[in-house]
Amino acid sequence: MGTAAAAAAAAGEGARSPSPAAVSLGLGVAVVSSLVNGSTFVLQKKGIVRAKRRGTSYLTDIVWWAGTIAMAVGQIGNFLAYTAVPTVLVTPLGALGVPFGSILASYLLKEKLNILGKLGCLLSCAGSVVLIIHSPKSESVTTQAELEEKLTNPVFVGYLCIVLLMLLLLIFWIAPAHGPTNIMVYISICSLLGSFTVPSTKGIGLAAQDIFHNNPSSQRALCLCLVLLAVLGCSIIVQFRYINKALECFDSSVFGAIYYVVFTTLVLLASAILFREWSNVGLVDFLGMACGFTTVSVGIVLIQVFKEFNFNLGEMNKSNMKTD
Image (tube, rainbow, N blue to C red):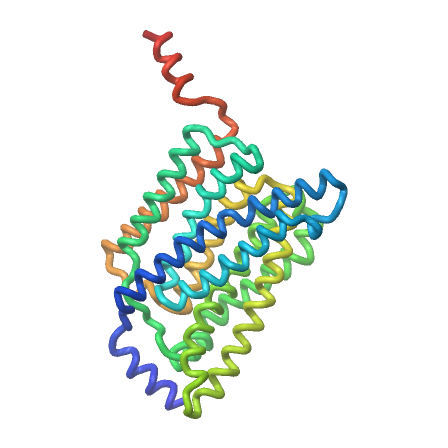
């Protein structure tokens, strides 16, 4: 215990700043992963629709499997990005997948994307750029000792207990009765699980750094890594199940948009409690990130809430001419 505290104190003298090359690589991987993840819901929904039309299970549809493989690739990309840059930067960048998914859905699923939807795509991309500019440039948890200390923090343990109770309530009581008619039930389950998946992914990357070292802490690092892998695997399996349940009942782009906002909010909350990455963010950058996240959320609302409105620039010009 004393060794862990000493290591944490030594590491805590200053937050580690990743090299510019690592940050650039992490950002690139995060952007590509968000685009890949944006396509997964659309491809899986397309596969489910095709399977229903044929009267077979979606497990036999190649398009559904393409979406599933894309989801796996996107998650691997997220894992690599989380090990290179702070969580508070990677998670909000998932917004780029929402407009990409909406554009893809307009072609593959014939879902509507009017002028407001296109404006929403632009706002989502602009908000993501603001998030990148104002994101923290250093990480507050950089060693296995610090990670162990954070994981046993009473505040984080209490937060996880609350999340577990909510998940049990949703999965065993609320979802069977209201899941197929209320989109927020499935979204809440998948988003709450993000409180486990993202911190576990980040933690695995930190613990893996000490596994292959010839020192007494390598065995503890291996045990911690295996525990986090088990938590991550269980969380992903449950998320995967309820994502497909949601896609069977609801519009893919609507699900993707609401899921992004709720998932990002809960993941940032869990990361703030565990990793304290917000402690390295000044007031200006905090306000910048808040504005960026708000811009992204407004863009997503424009994409989804007004998608049923049938109007375009040509019709607007005609109405203006009639008024004149």
